[in-house]
Length: 266
Image (cartoon, rainbow, N blue to C red; front, side, top):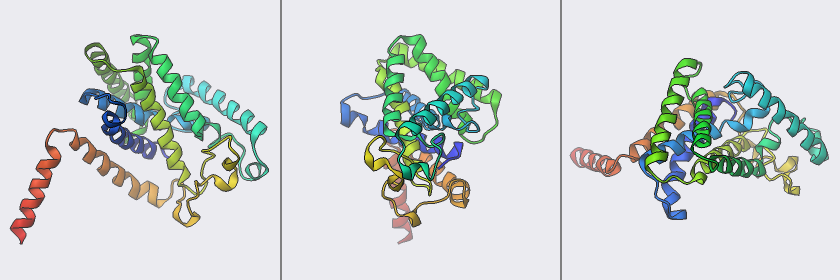
């Protein structure tokens, strides 16, 4: 999966699903505003691995700023590839795109880095929210809505200020959401015909393992008909269903309606 809308929608869905499981895993019970904040940040984090590609949504999201960041990320990825790539890797890629930023190491480092940054104080946390939410909005359809994205990102940041002021939200909630988004992107790209070196620097991260063991006939081409025409509708429907699930009693009401309809038809 390569297009910005695909990655952003995928990240938003995973963000909602993961936040629903958080109370069970760590004992922290987020409020609905905290869940929505985490969902937006996961969508933004799901675009960040493509900073290694100059023409990506993330690289073009904040003009010259992200252009410079993209150049640096691409250079670091190229150097790392030259130092660690196997012969099979060198035969199939250059290591600039879908290289270092598409590894578990990168996802963990991104999550830890933003957790540390958020822990520096409220200003750092709000700056993180603004930038990452703006990147998310640049990817979420419809695209090419510069002014609207800027205003919406500012509104999200204002909401985040209220959440951070009135409710205890740990720093790892913000950093972790971005890291999960990054991992979502990587797993999505692993299902394409090209794959990613997810397990780098382990030996299993060689060329033959870039598809995570998924048979080639089950993978699809990046930007192909399935991704461009079918997948956005499936992801959009899944996201809408999860958002409805945030409304107390919504799923029970839906079940009651379905049961009533089935009973009436019978």
